[in-house]
Image 1: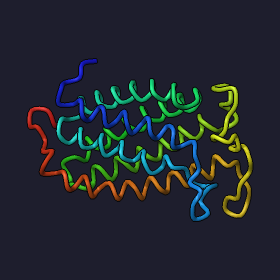
Image 2: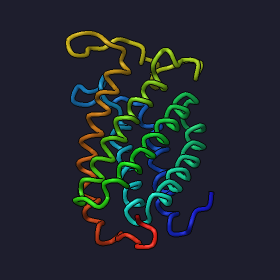
Image 3: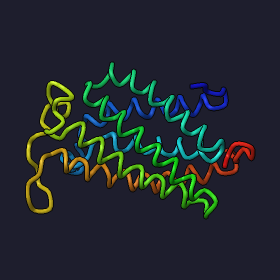
Length: 207
């Protein structure tokens, strides 16, 4: 895979977001009583969709795929070192599928109203990313991916409240994570819109 020099800032930004999110997702957001439904990673990860969509807008789908792959490789290397193997595997799988879906959706909607492509792409990518990541990282059927499973304190198998009943903690965390990703996806429209006149499409590439 070759990476043009102009794509390097996007690739580095992607790698930084992935690495930070892989670490932060292991720690509950212990504020406002949300410790059982939310992790810090939910706040950082949506930035990856912003980086992806800006790359796609300016340079097109092939360039966006290169940035995703470059970010995945660098992020995976750091994740293996900084996070558990199971977190790294789950994150890498969810990242690739979610981001590639984002690229496809964005490409189909890019000629509509400026906000539709990034919003729809981010929502679709976030949904599939959350489902894949939390299933692989924390659900008991995938425990073979690591010697154990859980958050930093090993508590993820404990039951928690969900819609008046009980469910594994990872399920409530997944729902909380997705909710914040949706909110953050909406907020990411602000920087995306602000950069529209700065990162204009390159006519020969962005299509």
